[in-house]
Image: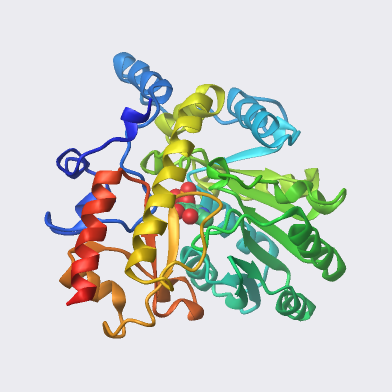
Length: 388
Ligand SMILES: Cc1ncc(COP(=O)(O)O)c(C=O)c1O
């Protein structure tokens, strides 16, 4: 199956998604979080059956309190992959993961109040907070030996602020690749309970945890589910972000009702292909995902070795999940914006660290969700550019 991931540059360039279309043809794009692989055969077959029938109507929505094929598929996946038993009727479909964060901000916080997030974090977290007229309250990730960890003392201080009601947790963490331990999450959960803070746990990268075990935040203490909304999607692990389908899992009936109190028009619907692809992924995608994860571990180790050979301090930690590497370029004399330098001088597009939070200046996020051949071509170019 590993041939599935052996993409050459010419083939990848034919892709019509954002990753390959934003920059000119001579640029190797290792930026936005998409992979360069075709979807799992089980998903392609399901989509082909829609195409054959010309079946592109509205997707069915799970009944408010009943079960549905979608809810059952999500529940089956959570149970099988993460040992997490959920009530399928507590799954609410959204067009993407970020919509869950937007709903939580709107439903559980007031305009002008702070919302807690980590520094750095996937930059739309800040965007949705600011777009809703709320204030980002950054809590630093600190580098501890081999990995990035959350500064729990700073988190306690943030939660202690009177007006704080919501924390946006990201696990596995984008961009650092940290998979939080149960102990770390129990400490976060204790603080949330102590200060009456609601947690939205974005677990969209959870299917891509490598050696580390992904534990759903809602399960880390007996009572934390009561104040947890899990935001996720099949689209990150299974590489179909363009089909627009995510979901929320409410940890309590009360939270579920508050999510469902948002009118459907504002919650917004998914597409039928997104709905069907999610069911296909979660009911039959396991073998493909196992093969993908083996490939990603190989690519991760390869990129870590090659970038480390350019400069040992480039690689700040080896990610425990997903296909994103957080790299530190501050020791290079390549101007204030390393992403611009590498785009112009190496013709490689990487994500600029400053977008991910105040601490991200001088860092770049590298997407290694591609083939060895494409990575090698990109890293060869980077090596030559920085040596000049
Ligand atoms: C942590 C995290 N959350 C959300 C998203 C976006 O997901 P969606 O397109 O489903 O909103 C991403 C995309 O990379 C992500 O890394």
